[in-house]
Length: 184
Image 1 (cartoon, rainbow, N blue to C red):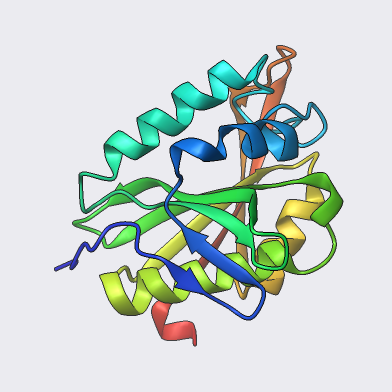
Image 2: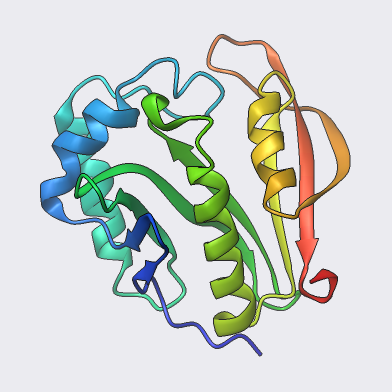
């Protein structure tokens, strides 16, 4: 049985993973949600303006009322502002599995920040909540995301062919990675 606790703050050496605040809209829009390069392989975005970002944050903030909601702002402690997000996108409580999605501001790519956030969130979901398997997927055209998954201890499982359409209308293949709690 999962013991849902919701989006609690988690701290690492460099990061504070926390709930989104209403005041985060400007940073989220400028740091990642409005950047076409960051959103290139995502099913959403880029946001056209800060208003769209504010609506997204308001939606997440309303979801925080439910203990099975896990949506963190990734705040870089040295600058005291959010530079990305990480969340549970899909959960299957019976199977004790979930799928994680994440996004990070371009100036912070290739610094181990997302790997640090992903490892931290996986530990929380395994040991505090009780998930037994965590999954993440990426567009095969975005191998850097797969590298993050590998560095966080996830293993490649399979490719799902033509599972969705990209925003440009082309069919998307997704690589699936997973980590089981007993693999630690």
